[in-house]
Each structure stands twice: as C-alpha cells, then as structure tokens.
Image (cartoon, rainbow, N blue to C red; front, side):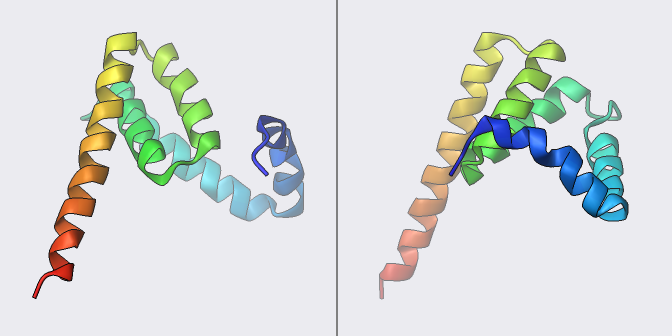
Length: 100
C-alpha cells in the first residue's frame, strides 16, 4: 500500500478539501517553524515520532527536512535510538499489566 508516489496526490486532496488542507498546512508550518526549539530539533522529534508510529511517508518527508535543517548522520542515528528506547520502554511498562 505504501508508495512514495502517493505524495503526489496531495494537491488533489487540497483541491477537494481546500479549507481542511489549508488548515493542516498552516498547523504543520507553525508547529515545525523555528521558535524556542530550533527547526532542526523539531524535525528530529518528528522523525522519532514517525519511527514510533512507523509512518513511511513521515519518515521520508522529515528525514529530508531534518537534513535540510542541518541534521547530521550521527544525529539521525541517535534519534533512531531515542525512538527505540521509547518503544522498548512502552512495552516494558505495559508488561506490568500482565502481572497480578
């Protein structure tokens, strides 16, 4: 089902639902803009979230954006392990529900 070519269909969604897509685009732009947290760090956070949600589209878009914002290969690698640690921690803590 995943195909990066599907990203080219976003303009069609915008033409069919311009108000909703415009609102999403404005939110996305505002959320990822430089602020108290620099854009590079926000893109690395987006990658960590994308890794935990396993969204291939987000991974593709935010990897490119992180690199464009100056993220290094080492920062990308460390971001991977932040996501790994959080997923492992979630499994560990949810495992406590199995115990009496």
